[in-house]
Image (cartoon, rainbow over all chains, first blue to last red; front, side, top):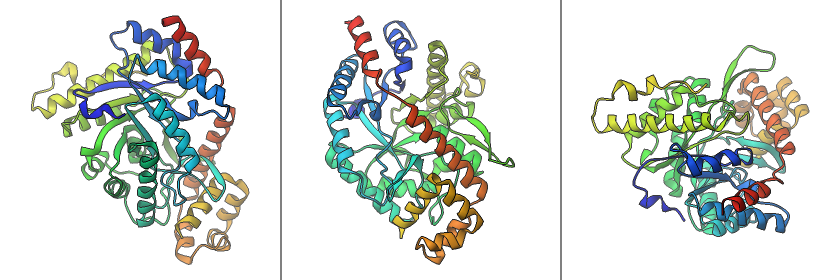
Length: 312
Length: 85
Protein backbone atom coordinates (compact mmCIF):
# COMPACT_ATOMS: atom_id res chain seq x y z
CA UNK A 1 0.00 0.00 0.00
CA UNK A 2 0.89 3.67 -0.25
CA UNK A 3 2.57 4.00 -3.59
CA UNK A 4 2.82 7.77 -3.25
CA UNK A 5 6.57 7.48 -2.68
CA UNK A 6 6.95 6.61 -6.32
CA UNK A 7 4.42 9.15 -7.52
CA UNK A 8 6.22 11.43 -9.96
CA UNK A 9 3.61 13.93 -10.98
CA UNK A 10 0.45 15.61 -9.78
CA UNK A 11 -2.79 13.66 -10.14
CA UNK A 12 -6.42 14.62 -9.96
CA UNK A 13 -9.21 12.21 -9.11
CA UNK A 14 -12.65 12.15 -7.62
CA UNK A 15 -14.73 10.52 -4.95
CA UNK A 16 -16.45 7.31 -6.01
CA UNK A 17 -20.18 7.49 -5.40
CA UNK A 18 -22.62 4.82 -6.63
CA UNK A 19 -24.75 7.49 -8.32
CA UNK A 20 -21.74 8.50 -10.41
CA UNK A 21 -20.77 4.95 -11.39
CA UNK A 22 -21.98 5.04 -15.02
CA UNK A 23 -20.35 8.39 -15.66
CA UNK A 24 -17.11 7.41 -13.98
CA UNK A 25 -16.84 4.19 -15.97
CA UNK A 26 -17.55 6.03 -19.16
CA UNK A 27 -14.93 8.68 -18.31
CA UNK A 28 -12.34 6.05 -17.40
CA UNK A 29 -12.79 4.43 -20.76
CA UNK A 30 -13.03 7.37 -23.09
CA UNK A 31 -12.31 10.77 -21.68
CA UNK A 32 -9.12 12.80 -21.91
CA UNK A 33 -10.16 14.39 -18.64
CA UNK A 34 -10.60 11.07 -16.89
CA UNK A 35 -9.93 10.85 -13.14
CA UNK A 36 -6.41 9.66 -12.36
CA UNK A 37 -7.65 7.90 -9.25
CA UNK A 38 -10.80 7.27 -7.23
CA UNK A 39 -11.37 7.76 -3.54
CA UNK A 40 -13.89 5.39 -1.99
CA UNK A 41 -15.68 5.85 1.32
CA UNK A 42 -14.79 2.99 3.64
CA UNK A 43 -18.28 3.07 5.15
CA UNK A 44 -19.83 2.15 1.80
CA UNK A 45 -17.92 -1.14 1.81
CA UNK A 46 -18.16 -2.14 5.46
CA UNK A 47 -21.40 -4.05 5.70
CA UNK A 48 -22.79 -5.93 8.67
CA UNK A 49 -23.76 -8.73 6.29
CA UNK A 50 -20.64 -10.75 5.51
CA UNK A 51 -21.87 -11.88 2.10
CA UNK A 52 -22.80 -8.34 1.02
CA UNK A 53 -19.48 -7.02 2.31
CA UNK A 54 -17.61 -9.74 0.39
CA UNK A 55 -19.50 -8.93 -2.81
CA UNK A 56 -18.82 -5.21 -2.50
CA UNK A 57 -15.16 -5.77 -1.66
CA UNK A 58 -14.71 -8.10 -4.56
CA UNK A 59 -16.26 -5.57 -6.96
CA UNK A 60 -14.03 -2.86 -5.53
CA UNK A 61 -11.01 -5.10 -6.01
CA UNK A 62 -11.79 -5.37 -9.70
CA UNK A 63 -12.22 -1.61 -9.88
CA UNK A 64 -8.80 -1.17 -8.26
CA UNK A 65 -7.24 -3.10 -11.13
CA UNK A 66 -8.41 -0.35 -13.51
CA UNK A 67 -7.63 2.75 -11.50
CA UNK A 68 -5.69 3.59 -8.32
CA UNK A 69 -7.89 3.67 -5.22
CA UNK A 70 -7.69 5.64 -2.01
CA UNK A 71 -9.83 4.65 0.98
CA UNK A 72 -11.39 7.47 2.99
CA UNK A 73 -12.80 6.69 6.41
CA UNK A 74 -15.18 9.01 8.24
CA UNK A 75 -16.35 7.43 11.46
CA UNK A 76 -13.38 6.27 13.49
CA UNK A 77 -13.27 9.41 15.63
CA UNK A 78 -9.49 9.56 15.74
CA UNK A 79 -9.32 12.88 17.63
CA UNK A 80 -11.40 11.62 20.53
CA UNK A 81 -9.90 11.06 23.94
CA UNK A 82 -11.70 7.69 23.90
CA UNK A 83 -9.49 5.01 22.41
CA UNK A 84 -10.41 4.33 18.79
CA UNK A 85 -12.45 1.14 18.49
CA UNK A 86 -10.44 -1.99 17.75
CA UNK A 87 -13.47 -3.58 16.07
CA UNK A 88 -13.90 -0.65 13.67
CA UNK A 89 -10.17 -0.60 12.93
CA UNK A 90 -10.05 -4.34 12.29
CA UNK A 91 -12.94 -4.05 9.83
CA UNK A 92 -11.14 -1.23 8.04
CA UNK A 93 -7.90 -3.22 8.09
CA UNK A 94 -9.63 -6.17 6.41
CA UNK A 95 -10.95 -3.91 3.65
CA UNK A 96 -7.58 -2.26 3.15
CA UNK A 97 -5.68 -5.53 3.12
CA UNK A 98 -8.10 -6.87 0.55
CA UNK A 99 -8.13 -3.83 -1.74
CA UNK A 100 -4.53 -2.69 -1.25
CA UNK A 101 -5.28 0.97 -1.92
CA UNK A 102 -2.50 3.45 -2.45
CA UNK A 103 -3.41 5.29 0.72
CA UNK A 104 -6.05 5.67 3.37
CA UNK A 105 -7.26 8.67 5.30
CA UNK A 106 -9.37 9.82 8.23
CA UNK A 107 -10.30 13.10 9.91
CA UNK A 108 -8.94 15.14 12.77
CA UNK A 109 -12.28 14.96 14.51
CA UNK A 110 -14.36 13.11 17.05
CA UNK A 111 -17.75 11.70 16.10
CA UNK A 112 -19.07 10.24 19.35
CA UNK A 113 -18.42 10.45 23.07
CA UNK A 114 -19.84 8.74 26.12
CA UNK A 115 -22.31 6.82 23.98
CA UNK A 116 -23.69 9.89 22.15
CA UNK A 117 -23.33 9.80 18.36
CA UNK A 118 -22.83 13.26 16.85
CA UNK A 119 -23.50 11.97 13.36
CA UNK A 120 -20.64 13.82 11.76
CA UNK A 121 -17.22 15.33 12.33
CA UNK A 122 -16.71 17.63 15.31
CA UNK A 123 -13.64 19.29 16.76
CA UNK A 124 -12.56 18.37 20.28
CA UNK A 125 -10.95 21.02 22.45
CA UNK A 126 -7.62 21.87 20.81
CA UNK A 127 -5.18 21.29 23.64
CA UNK A 128 -2.31 19.06 24.72
CA UNK A 129 -4.69 16.30 25.83
CA UNK A 130 -6.30 15.99 22.39
CA UNK A 131 -2.91 16.13 20.66
CA UNK A 132 -1.72 13.20 22.78
CA UNK A 133 -4.96 11.23 22.41
CA UNK A 134 -5.11 11.74 18.64
CA UNK A 135 -1.48 10.74 18.16
CA UNK A 136 -2.13 7.62 20.26
CA UNK A 137 -5.18 6.73 18.16
CA UNK A 138 -3.28 7.29 14.91
CA UNK A 139 -0.46 5.02 16.08
CA UNK A 140 -2.98 2.33 17.05
CA UNK A 141 -4.66 2.61 13.66
CA UNK A 142 -1.32 2.35 11.88
CA UNK A 143 -0.49 -0.75 13.91
CA UNK A 144 -3.74 -2.52 13.07
CA UNK A 145 -4.15 -1.34 9.47
CA UNK A 146 -0.49 -1.63 8.55
CA UNK A 147 0.16 1.94 7.45
CA UNK A 148 -0.24 5.48 8.71
CA UNK A 149 -3.30 7.40 7.56
CA UNK A 150 -3.36 10.84 6.02
CA UNK A 151 -5.31 12.95 8.51
CA UNK A 152 -7.69 15.62 7.24
CA UNK A 153 -8.41 19.08 8.63
CA UNK A 154 -12.17 19.51 9.07
CA UNK A 155 -14.61 22.36 8.54
CA UNK A 156 -16.34 23.63 11.65
CA UNK A 157 -19.19 26.01 12.33
CA UNK A 158 -18.13 26.43 15.94
CA UNK A 159 -14.72 26.94 17.49
CA UNK A 160 -14.07 24.23 20.09
CA UNK A 161 -14.17 25.42 23.70
CA UNK A 162 -11.41 24.71 26.23
CA UNK A 163 -8.81 25.18 23.49
CA UNK A 164 -5.33 26.59 23.87
CA UNK A 165 -4.00 26.00 20.35
CA UNK A 166 -4.90 27.57 17.03
CA UNK A 167 -6.07 25.13 14.39
CA UNK A 168 -2.72 25.17 12.62
CA UNK A 169 -0.77 24.68 15.86
CA UNK A 170 -3.01 21.77 16.80
CA UNK A 171 -2.73 20.09 13.40
CA UNK A 172 1.03 20.57 13.26
CA UNK A 173 1.55 19.07 16.71
CA UNK A 174 -0.53 16.00 15.85
CA UNK A 175 1.30 15.48 12.57
CA UNK A 176 4.67 15.72 14.30
CA UNK A 177 3.64 13.55 17.27
CA UNK A 178 2.12 10.79 15.15
CA UNK A 179 4.21 10.88 11.98
CA UNK A 180 1.05 10.85 9.85
CA UNK A 181 0.55 12.63 6.56
CA UNK A 182 -1.77 15.61 6.28
CA UNK A 183 -4.75 15.46 3.95
CA UNK A 184 -5.32 19.14 3.33
CA UNK A 185 -8.96 19.88 2.55
CA UNK A 186 -8.88 23.26 0.87
CA UNK A 187 -12.61 23.88 1.03
CA UNK A 188 -12.56 23.17 4.75
CA UNK A 189 -9.72 25.65 5.06
CA UNK A 190 -11.56 28.21 2.92
CA UNK A 191 -14.80 27.77 4.91
CA UNK A 192 -13.07 28.07 8.30
CA UNK A 193 -11.09 31.10 7.12
CA UNK A 194 -14.31 32.71 5.89
CA UNK A 195 -16.37 31.87 8.99
CA UNK A 196 -13.72 32.78 11.53
CA UNK A 197 -12.01 35.61 9.67
CA UNK A 198 -8.44 34.45 9.24
CA UNK A 199 -6.08 34.48 6.28
CA UNK A 200 -5.79 31.01 4.73
CA UNK A 201 -2.37 31.90 3.33
CA UNK A 202 -1.05 32.52 6.83
CA UNK A 203 -2.56 29.16 7.81
CA UNK A 204 -0.49 27.56 5.03
CA UNK A 205 2.61 29.29 6.45
CA UNK A 206 2.11 27.51 9.75
CA UNK A 207 1.39 23.89 8.81
CA UNK A 208 3.97 21.29 7.76
CA UNK A 209 3.37 21.44 3.99
CA UNK A 210 6.11 18.86 3.50
CA UNK A 211 3.63 16.34 4.96
CA UNK A 212 0.91 17.22 2.45
CA UNK A 213 0.66 14.84 -0.48
CA UNK A 214 -3.09 14.57 -0.64
CA UNK A 215 -5.66 17.33 -1.11
CA UNK A 216 -9.45 17.56 -1.15
CA UNK A 217 -11.41 20.15 -3.06
CA UNK A 218 -15.16 20.74 -2.89
CA UNK A 219 -17.87 23.35 -2.86
CA UNK A 220 -20.35 24.67 -0.36
CA UNK A 221 -23.08 27.20 0.19
CA UNK A 222 -24.02 30.08 2.42
CA UNK A 223 -26.40 29.34 5.27
CA UNK A 224 -27.97 31.52 7.93
CA UNK A 225 -28.04 30.73 11.63
CA UNK A 226 -31.41 29.64 13.07
CA UNK A 227 -33.29 32.84 13.76
CA UNK A 228 -31.11 34.70 11.29
CA UNK A 229 -28.41 37.20 12.03
CA UNK A 230 -25.26 35.37 11.05
CA UNK A 231 -24.09 33.79 7.84
CA UNK A 232 -21.76 30.83 7.49
CA UNK A 233 -20.11 29.13 4.57
CA UNK A 234 -21.14 25.47 4.86
CA UNK A 235 -18.92 22.73 3.46
CA UNK A 236 -21.72 20.65 1.93
CA UNK A 237 -20.07 18.99 -1.11
CA UNK A 238 -23.25 19.72 -3.06
CA UNK A 239 -22.03 22.63 -5.15
CA UNK A 240 -19.27 23.34 -7.67
CA UNK A 241 -15.80 23.95 -6.28
CA UNK A 242 -15.50 27.51 -5.02
CA UNK A 243 -13.07 29.64 -7.00
CA UNK A 244 -10.93 30.57 -3.95
CA UNK A 245 -10.32 26.84 -3.51
CA UNK A 246 -8.60 26.66 -6.91
CA UNK A 247 -6.51 29.69 -5.91
CA UNK A 248 -5.49 27.88 -2.70
CA UNK A 249 -4.63 24.77 -4.73
CA UNK A 250 -2.35 26.83 -6.95
CA UNK A 251 -0.82 28.35 -3.83
CA UNK A 252 -0.04 24.93 -2.32
CA UNK A 253 1.41 23.73 -5.64
CA UNK A 254 3.61 26.84 -5.71
CA UNK A 255 4.85 26.19 -2.19
CA UNK A 256 5.68 22.48 -2.27
CA UNK A 257 7.90 20.50 -4.63
CA UNK A 258 6.14 17.25 -3.81
CA UNK A 259 3.75 15.64 -6.27
CA UNK A 260 0.18 16.15 -5.10
CA UNK A 261 -2.90 13.96 -5.37
CA UNK A 262 -6.09 16.03 -5.55
CA UNK A 263 -9.53 14.53 -5.02
CA UNK A 264 -12.80 16.25 -5.92
CA UNK A 265 -15.51 15.51 -3.36
CA UNK A 266 -19.15 15.59 -4.41
CA UNK A 267 -21.85 14.06 -2.24
CA UNK A 268 -25.11 14.88 -4.00
CA UNK A 269 -27.01 17.22 -6.35
CA UNK A 270 -24.87 15.56 -8.97
CA UNK A 271 -24.39 17.45 -12.22
CA UNK A 272 -23.71 15.70 -15.51
CA UNK A 273 -20.32 13.98 -15.58
CA UNK A 274 -18.80 16.50 -18.07
CA UNK A 275 -19.26 19.21 -15.44
CA UNK A 276 -17.36 17.17 -12.85
CA UNK A 277 -14.65 16.37 -15.38
CA UNK A 278 -14.45 20.08 -16.10
CA UNK A 279 -13.80 20.66 -12.40
CA UNK A 280 -10.98 18.10 -12.57
CA UNK A 281 -9.52 20.08 -15.47
CA UNK A 282 -9.79 23.29 -13.44
CA UNK A 283 -7.85 21.58 -10.66
CA UNK A 284 -5.20 20.47 -13.15
CA UNK A 285 -4.95 24.04 -14.44
CA UNK A 286 -4.56 25.35 -10.89
CA UNK A 287 -1.81 22.83 -10.20
CA UNK A 288 -0.02 23.80 -13.41
CA UNK A 289 -0.30 27.49 -12.56
CA UNK A 290 1.17 26.84 -9.11
CA UNK A 291 4.00 24.73 -10.50
CA UNK A 292 4.87 27.40 -13.06
CA UNK A 293 4.95 29.98 -10.31
CA UNK A 294 7.17 27.75 -8.23
CA UNK A 295 9.56 27.36 -11.14
CA UNK A 296 9.69 31.13 -11.52
CA UNK A 297 7.92 31.09 -14.86
CA UNK A 298 5.46 33.84 -15.59
CA UNK A 299 1.99 32.31 -15.66
CA UNK A 300 0.37 32.97 -19.04
CA UNK A 301 -2.97 34.73 -18.74
CA UNK A 302 -4.72 31.70 -20.17
CA UNK A 303 -3.45 29.57 -17.26
CA UNK A 304 -3.99 32.07 -14.51
CA UNK A 305 -6.20 30.74 -11.75
CA UNK A 306 -7.99 34.07 -11.62
CA UNK A 307 -9.07 33.46 -15.21
CA UNK A 308 -10.46 29.99 -14.67
CA UNK A 309 -14.08 29.98 -15.70
CA UNK A 310 -16.32 29.17 -12.76
CA UNK A 311 -17.87 25.73 -13.00
CA UNK A 312 -21.14 26.94 -11.52
CA UNK B 1 -11.32 16.35 31.97
CA UNK B 2 -11.08 16.20 28.20
CA UNK B 3 -13.35 13.16 27.92
CA UNK B 4 -16.05 14.89 29.97
CA UNK B 5 -15.95 17.99 27.76
CA UNK B 6 -16.19 15.84 24.62
CA UNK B 7 -19.11 13.91 26.09
CA UNK B 8 -20.89 17.12 26.99
CA UNK B 9 -20.27 18.57 23.51
CA UNK B 10 -21.59 15.39 21.87
CA UNK B 11 -24.74 15.58 24.00
CA UNK B 12 -25.19 19.27 23.19
CA UNK B 13 -25.06 18.47 19.47
CA UNK B 14 -27.36 15.46 19.74
CA UNK B 15 -29.92 16.45 22.37
CA UNK B 16 -32.08 19.49 21.60
CA UNK B 17 -33.52 19.56 25.12
CA UNK B 18 -30.12 19.69 26.77
CA UNK B 19 -28.99 22.29 24.26
CA UNK B 20 -31.89 24.58 25.17
CA UNK B 21 -31.21 24.08 28.87
CA UNK B 22 -27.56 24.95 28.25
CA UNK B 23 -28.46 28.06 26.28
CA UNK B 24 -30.74 29.18 29.13
CA UNK B 25 -28.11 28.59 31.81
CA UNK B 26 -24.77 27.50 30.33
CA UNK B 27 -22.48 27.46 33.38
CA UNK B 28 -25.09 25.88 35.64
CA UNK B 29 -25.88 23.15 33.10
CA UNK B 30 -22.22 22.37 32.44
CA UNK B 31 -21.50 22.23 36.17
CA UNK B 32 -24.37 19.76 36.62
CA UNK B 33 -22.50 17.46 34.24
CA UNK B 34 -19.44 17.59 36.48
CA UNK B 35 -17.37 19.98 34.41
CA UNK B 36 -14.92 22.25 36.18
CA UNK B 37 -15.59 25.98 36.58
CA UNK B 38 -12.97 26.74 33.91
CA UNK B 39 -14.45 24.23 31.47
CA UNK B 40 -17.95 25.48 32.18
CA UNK B 41 -16.97 29.11 31.55
CA UNK B 42 -15.22 28.17 28.33
CA UNK B 43 -18.32 26.29 27.15
CA UNK B 44 -20.48 29.26 28.13
CA UNK B 45 -18.43 31.47 25.82
CA UNK B 46 -19.55 29.53 22.70
CA UNK B 47 -21.68 31.94 20.66
CA UNK B 48 -25.27 30.65 20.76
CA UNK B 49 -25.65 31.11 17.00
CA UNK B 50 -22.54 28.98 16.32
CA UNK B 51 -23.79 26.19 18.59
CA UNK B 52 -27.27 26.23 17.07
CA UNK B 53 -25.99 26.30 13.49
CA UNK B 54 -23.50 23.50 14.12
CA UNK B 55 -26.17 21.41 15.86
CA UNK B 56 -28.60 21.90 13.00
CA UNK B 57 -25.92 20.80 10.55
CA UNK B 58 -25.19 17.66 12.60
CA UNK B 59 -28.90 16.92 12.87
CA UNK B 60 -29.19 17.02 9.09
CA UNK B 61 -26.16 14.75 8.74
CA UNK B 62 -27.72 12.22 11.11
CA UNK B 63 -30.92 12.32 9.11
CA UNK B 64 -29.04 11.83 5.83
CA UNK B 65 -27.02 8.99 7.30
CA UNK B 66 -30.17 7.24 8.48
CA UNK B 67 -31.69 7.63 5.03
CA UNK B 68 -28.59 6.56 3.16
CA UNK B 69 -28.68 3.04 1.90
CA UNK B 70 -25.67 1.60 0.18
CA UNK B 71 -27.35 -1.69 -0.63
CA UNK B 72 -27.23 -1.04 -4.36
CA UNK B 73 -23.54 -0.25 -4.38
CA UNK B 74 -22.24 -3.75 -4.96
CA UNK B 75 -24.86 -4.20 -7.67
CA UNK B 76 -23.70 -1.14 -9.54
CA UNK B 77 -20.10 -2.24 -9.40
CA UNK B 78 -20.73 -5.84 -10.28
CA UNK B 79 -22.99 -5.05 -13.21
CA UNK B 80 -20.74 -2.41 -14.69
CA UNK B 81 -17.57 -4.37 -14.19
CA UNK B 82 -19.08 -7.47 -15.75
CA UNK B 83 -20.05 -5.31 -18.70
CA UNK B 84 -16.49 -4.01 -19.05
CA UNK B 85 -14.68 -7.33 -18.76
